[in-house]
Amino acid sequence: MKLQLFPELGCEFILQDNEFWHNDGMVSDLQQWKYRLDVHYDDNSLPLAEESTGHCSQYWWGRENHVHFAYRDLGNPLLNLFVVAHESTHGLTILNQEEVLQSELTRAGFNEDLMSLDPETKANVSGLCALLRRGTGLVPAISLVTARLHVPDDIGMYFNCS
Image (cartoon, rainbow, N blue to C red; front, top):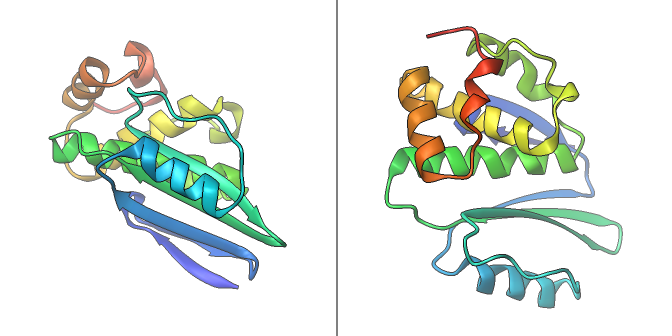
């Protein structure tokens, strides 16, 4: 077993010996990044949409479970942080590690059971939590991500802080 850090949300999780976490970071061409991974892992999944801001993919290589994620530069460090936390959450969902997020999200004012949410809402809540950890207020954080990303305006309803 291996310890893996999730610094954007201040938590850590355990990977099994056959699990691999690949934070491929900021890439200049997200579609090309995914295509190269698909070729490497001999996977025929669908290409990404041009407007994608980040992506997380799971690849099996024999008995090894590889989770890769990357994002493109959005020209704003807070938006980049949101997308990294968002995509990391998809990775944790793939690896059945969502429970490690629950206590950190609760400390940030999240008042729901994470497991009860759909995957995109979970990822958006985690992204918002990462912004709150950096000292961004809830209202400015919501305004930023709803104006620039495809995040529903009601995302703040899951938090009981101001």
